[in-house]
Image (cartoon, rainbow, N blue to C red; front, side):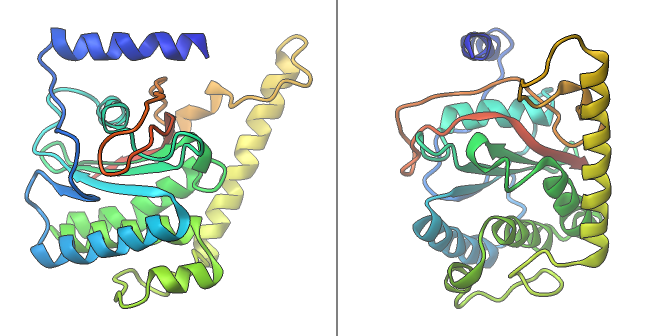
Length: 255
């Protein structure tokens, strides 16, 4: 914990030293700084994300930027989360969908509190299956919409989901109510088995780590987490942002 806290001022100092700038605190939940989304998409997603937040208290923010300014998308995303204070402090329930068209990179950044539900593997599959195919065709509206829909579907179910999507026409293939896709879940189960094998193997090879529960850094080579080793504990700010904590959970992709 102390190590993570130490990284925060270091990250802030590096922004100053290397001229790395971040967008100002957002006025809403859809922030199209790269100007790649249509006004209709912005308006409809803003309303959808407001209902999502009101129903669940989770905060999902869409951000597009003209450039990452030489930073990796993982580093840029975690610093943006730190500055904007997305999510509730007591719940760590923030999510950022970040798109950088110039570098052709996309990332879903997940707060600590939602990592058990919106896992690295789920984020990676949403990116690869629903976002990147649309981006490859030059359709940012569809890619972003589908990404948002599937993130919401992964974190909500039942009557709440129907309430959130009321009056909204989904773009993603199939219903937004679930991620029920045999291929999708087959891959998730396979990756889960791989993760389990790696964790068990690391425990056998390490000395005396019985009973310790942690997310092993040895599994991140698979390409989901892109762990950035950062976190923040703010006191609020932004559009009702409460200072949720982030530690690099999520996934990144390119097209």
